[in-house]
Length: 328
Image (cartoon, rainbow, N blue to C red; front, top):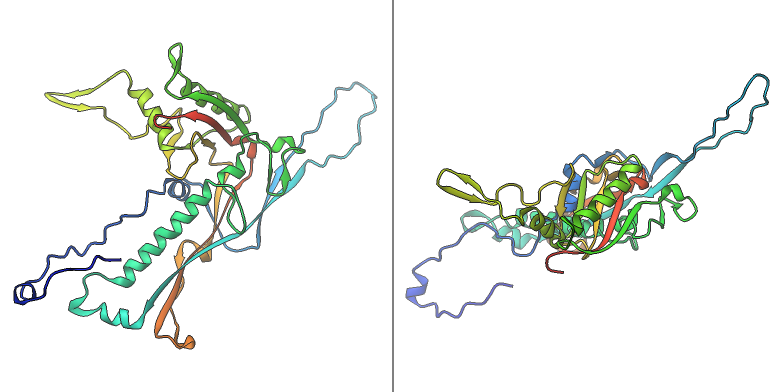
């Protein structure tokens, strides 16, 4: 709520207007880097409809046999296919404005468009909630999170398939138990841990495109890269440490996010990980409707998103935990 004023509105105060900056300045939202990356990095797939998402998986291999002449051969049929199923999940946040507020927020007296700003706030609030759920464990009617898709021991049921019994469905994992900037020989322990989990993914045919981790761990990674004190010189101008805020690691983009739990990191192959979005609920605003049927002069809309986070090849996802960053 805005602070109250204590001035006495005499002629001196009444005769002079205040200087007002009409731009609304965000003081609450953070950069939601996980959901932004999922929506921009080729991992988003838009679906036209459907009650559930079905992914058909090849889950077993046959055994060829060597033979000669009239040796009898196996006639046993193969059943190498099954499916994973994912439920749709929906999110909504209201945009509500009374007619009197809308009337007053118009004409020359309008400092900024209240209705437009409420819409922007609703979108940011929607992104905030979904970003938090992207890196959490699923509960209630929420979407699956990274903590579900890639667990700390590779097990768990995802898409209706239990990895404890269907071991081919286990994700890759590593409990590093290291401080990133400690070193063994000339190699930082955090770099070693990242190499190990990335190699585990590679052995399963995966290719890590993105590493989602904490600012603390990403900062430790940047510290490791800059620890030799290199500086870039241009004539008489010293540029200091130049380049990306979080440089890539072996071809993977390093993405830091404040919602990711401490000491955690996920290694994602974009071919095996998707954010599925409904076309009719693609982070969009529903039409405004009148509240007059409730005896209220006002209007109501919702910012909505129909989303689910899925994997079609869980063994190509990796998770590493117990890495201490620079300020953990």
